[in-house]
Image 1 (cartoon, each protein chain N blue to C red):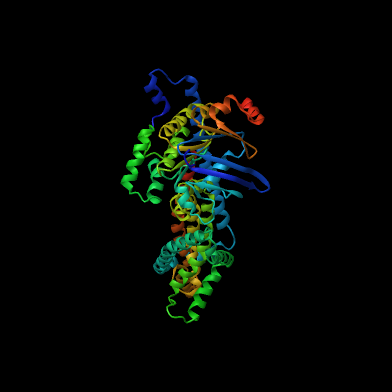
Image 2 (image 1 turned 120 degrees about the horizontal axis):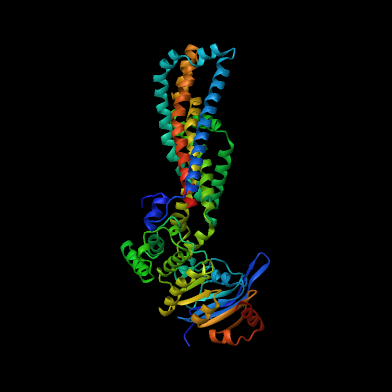
Length: 244
Length: 292
């Protein structure tokens, strides 16, 4: 078995006096797609934000490529360069065109030349059916288009790992499809991904591994097939019964 | 794309719709109402102005006031000198304005630094804003105008207008810093998260993501501060350079006629009104953009 790309060990996170993550353990192998499922407030988003160091964890450790990234001496910016994250609310930069949104990090962080960065960005846009939107500002795009641009923006830095935080939750059903299409393509491109999602049928289709979180605890972990057809933990069973 | 009225556009698309009689009546009523409110506004404005004018001119002291404040002869005599002084006001304003923007932006950015190394700088920035927002501008002008040269330090300017510019920059820089800071804080934290998650450093996130959005938002309040700065250049008169107010004072003290002050006031109004309208225009435009 290959070494894990990401290893999460006994991670705790508190907000004020409430524990959001209570000793999470998780391993993600290269090219693996992991779906985190669970009710709102179960800690899915927080876990992703901790992996991307947008939140400081309160205990435990996280390793990326075998190196501990939760060591206070580690260069956070360098770690984030290897991880792409896409948010539920897109968070595109409203004052920049689509093209500038996508090329900002490659140009300023990875020091790629403008021409090369733009060429790569246009390739990505064309691949995901957005070629004509390069010069548009985000507020001219539909939610689905914005989210696809956000995914391309994260992809443009060629991350080792992609974190997708409920990327379809802010979209109406018609637009969900186009965003899920792009995620499917990422899987075909063998991208390692962790998705927090409420789309159960999509999780079942795309995930290699499904993790069920409940009250900040990882209750059950298994293949998509096993979790959805034969959940062992009674809480997983209750949750799936309530959403399916 | 050209803006067509809805009827034309619809006709082009379907070739079928003709405006209904009900809609024609509705629009006629609306036009009539618009005309009525327009004429009502005009009439009430005229009546209002006549009443004010009558009230002022009918007052017992009016002939004296007219003689001392609205003397055409004194007006013409003072105009060249006051206008000449006013050019200095404009110069002070034009030099002080970019300096103020620079100081304000720097102070606001220093206040947003998080690293402990910068604690002394941050403390200094907070102290600066607290002090100069608290001291009346006219006192700052006195302190800088008379205190700074009194130190007899090498390289300290002695030119009164320059000292005035330094004082105005210190005073307004504190206000403008707070305007910038409010702008920076109004950018949603998720924008910073998004920038940082792409690997941008704190400085890069600030420069490429937060500041461009912040500055756009604070343009109207900044212009408002500049309207105020334009007239506050007159406060520099207290330390002596020959700007508009000082020239007017000189004329007035020679003739005991106060019309020169009116000249100065008119010049200031002529300068600030376009700026005020421009501010309104920008505010409306940004509102319209948000509404889209």
